[in-house]
Amino acid sequence: MTEEEARAWIVDRFDVPRETLLADYVALLLAEAEHQNLISASTVDTLWSRHIVDSAQLLLLAGEKVGGTWVDIGTGAGLPGIVVAILEPRNHYVLVEPRGKRVAFLEQCVAQLGLADRVQVIGSKIERYSPPHRADIVSARAVAPLPNLFASAAPSTSRKTLWLLPKGRNAQSEVEAARRAWQGSFHVEQSVTDPESGIVVAREVRPR
Image 1 (tube, rainbow, N blue to C red):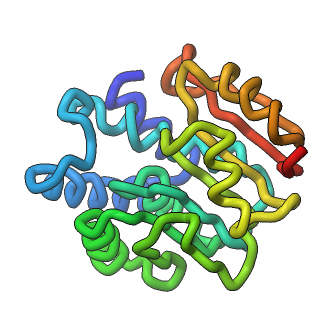
Image 2: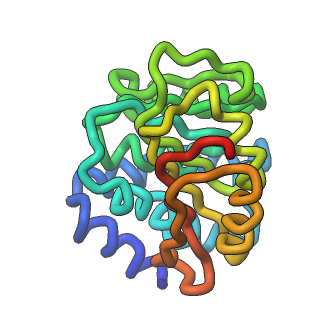
């Protein structure tokens, strides 16, 4: 997927004004990337396909599950948290990120992009976060192996939580490893940005 194709993919599914707001976010991201390591330098020239569409595709997997709380674990540069918050305004988003400089950047994005009505930034590890409500959706982009992630996020989730977890080329093997200690409904969706990468979609997750 080229950068032109990536931007067209966004417009076709989410409309032009949201693509424009994403462009504003990309500008903030590139400016901040000069001061801290937010994204790999090798992905700067493919930022729309490698990061923006890669994040936005999670909304297609969320289906009609809107209007609830979406917790993004280890948000980092705002991927996918800021991206999905721009594209789907009906959810409440909680961006959980332990690193101080990245928290400051996320707070800057929320303020400058006008997302304060639906985005909350939590400067914490997910294990230490005590949510007022269990998450309806959880995302985590390359944060931790599935068994560790399920255990760490257990206090923030329930059996009703939908998990959307980009896992690259190791998606299926991570599912097999997780099944030793966790049960639920697991399947792997092919990424639209890389046919060799997978996204783990999990429901009814609970310990064995």
